[in-house]
Length: 127
View 1: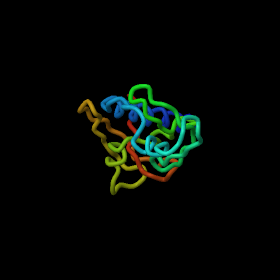
View 2: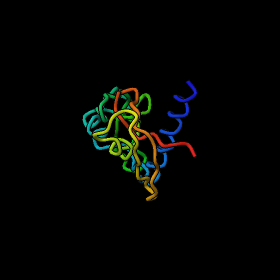
View 3: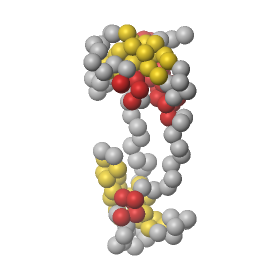
View 4: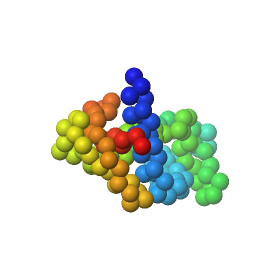
């Protein structure tokens, strides 16, 4: 149990490190505006984002003054290990040694482990 908790925390830390180089969100995606193109403010709406359909209400974007579909709940975020951790275990077996490049250019050694979705990812060793 303790090993699983440490593994989850390590994957989250690697994921957070990979996300630090990503630019901040730039507002609603185009699909959110399209969902309210023929609706009025306050109308119910839905929009497909990533692999999920998000429901909400049409609201006015304060910058563009256009209506967009504001989700009832935040859209699903990125789940699972970062792409670098998955790539490091491509073609390897569960338990194999691996190393993943972090966004800062450093390398982390670890072990390939299968996550909840059975996808292998490089789990960094604890220092």
